[in-house]
Image (tube, rainbow, N blue to C red; front, side, top):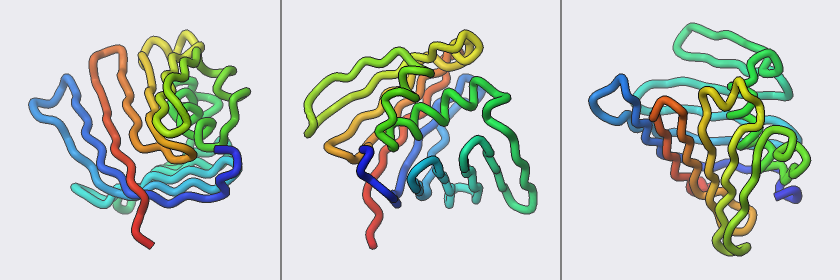
Length: 158
């Protein structure tokens, strides 16, 4: 992963939440630029943009925007670093934030992450990333309250 400079992919994400009677399905694009920029752009069923550049997370929905420092929010930092450190091939960052279990082979791998930070562990149960080679194909997030997110990632058509 450490050799990938930039990546643009499409995603479909299904969120199952205890508060909702039916799952919510989101569609959009993901962008990663080395060393620490990631962006999730939701196109359907609504428009939203979430980007992290360094320690700054910015969110835009409609005319409303806000920024926050992820270093001040351990739960958000745990979510971000699980994805970003994996994309960057930054094993040291993963070890700082997670218990790590890697299974499989280069052609079919699964990386299971459980947060080390006690505050993050009160909300986030685990993050599992699945892929092949340097490509992440799926991200599954389990929260302690039972909420779950499953994202399928595919290479965008150029």
